[in-house]
Amino acid sequence: MSDTEVKFEDMEKFEIVQRFSNWKELLKPSAEMRKGFYSYAASLKDQEYLNLPFPREWSPLDDDWKLPPNWKEIIINKMDELRKKYRSFQVFMDICVRCGACADKCHYYIGTGDPKNMPVVRAELLRSIYRKYFTKTGKVFGEYAGARELTEDVIKEWYIYYFQCSECRRCSVFCPYGIDTAEITMLARELLNSIGISQRFTLTSAAACVRTGNHLGLNPGGVVNSIQYAVDDIKEITGIDVEVPVNKKGADILFVTPSGDYFAQPHWFTFIGYLMIFHELDLDYTMSTYAAEGGNFGFFHSFEVAKKINQKIYKEAKRLGVKWILGGECGHMWRVKHQYMATFVDDTYEDALKSLEEPVNPITGTKFENASSTKMVHILEFLADILKHKKLKIDKSRNDHLRVTHHDSCNIARGMGLFEEPRYVIKSVCNYYYDMPDHSIREKSYCCGSGAGLLADELFELRMRGGMPRAMAVKYVHERYGVNHVTAACAIDRAAIPTLLQYWKLPVQMGGVTELVANAMIMSGEKERDTDLRGNPLGEYLEVEV
Ligand code: SF4
Ligand code: SF4
Image (tube, rainbow, N blue to C red):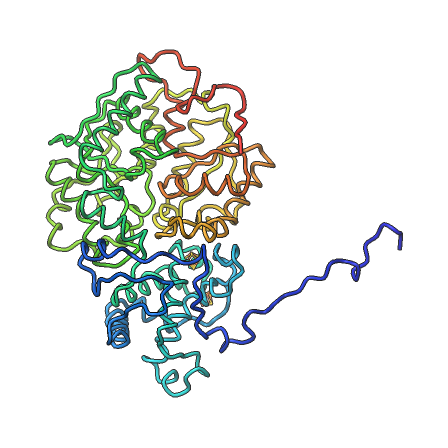
């Protein structure tokens, strides 16, 4: 052996510390509130506004969570109601064989190393209670059958770990039985809500949406002002006066986008991109100050709140008398519409849905048959169709300063199967596009780490750890191909990923897909342009500062 060769025994010893020595240990509730890993409690004001059960001031840090006296009975009864109502719940509780195929597929497990973030264990936190109260083996053999008593510490543990799941569904792709842990998380949150336990960030957004029509609580004047700022920016960039119809009755299309697009960065460039493209196409559309929000934070809280929020877009579409709805680059708007509409639509707005027509693109004549039940078309389906029919004048070289990759947002990729459209649109307007590694895109896409209410400030450490697999995939294409721009068609991604890139020190910027289309589009009568929408000079490779 030469002097330079390293002997195995000289290498640093790696120690694997087993946190739980056996399955019984794992089932003992972990109720410690660690900074960066637990969510703040919902405010009393929001709980009362949404008429939630047992509204009160409480804190996860208190020993006493002021649960209602019969909280145990409420949970067991609610669980019984849910397992009878949702066949999937009963099936997911019964059929897991603990094969472990999902175990290492959750980004929160990868980022934290906490075994309770393995999807199989996350589900077991609820399944163990189900076994105890609803199965014979659980009742007779107790913990030997993987069953455990429902205690206050179990409730605290649920609150921690079901708000460490972004409901992204990545684990379900790898489960041979198709068990959807995201749905188990939703039901656990529903159970927590039944005894007055809700997360602040989710509920603040949901209450604002019920009150004003958008998560940010913008009043109609605020929405109109924001649109006016966008019109001014477009004039400055292109020299063109763009008119944006608001609350216009009888237009063909109602355009709805996430409220983050109205002011946040880098959402803003996607927002002005929509308005530039609609102007250039001379589209007969309107925006609305009432339905100025695509997302539905109620979906991350409970069935009732989700249902309440879902109706507003349809009621507004009927009031304005449009034919169909075009939706912007939003994530959970599309998950709700594509996966849960059948249960969310009731007689309060079924007529509104029926008043709409099967969407037809007025510019190309394409029928969107896939949208015949929802009457809603995604902006990327719309743009792919527009570009395929060459209805916009495009100069791809205007994006030559960018090397682009695309993050498949969980809700539109796994939630609605939109894998090809974003890539088709980007490649139609950019010369340099590079996919991230296969295991991190399309149906296997890694979550940004901030969905389902986890964008909350207090969860910063969890988000940066959970977002690590996505950040590392971006790092790979940055180092290999010089990627300096990542796109995502979801407002939560546009809020979460820039911070993630900064945290992991990656010189890469991010934005929506529509922004790139607007960069490359040559508008009729535009002034000479030497910058992109952000003011970056065209041509030379863009060095992004970390
Ligand atoms: S749904 Fe996503 S966040 Fe939740 S357990 Fe599965 S992989 Fe993890
Ligand atoms: S992959 Fe499916 S069956 Fe296997 S442990 Fe995970 S949830 Fe259970």
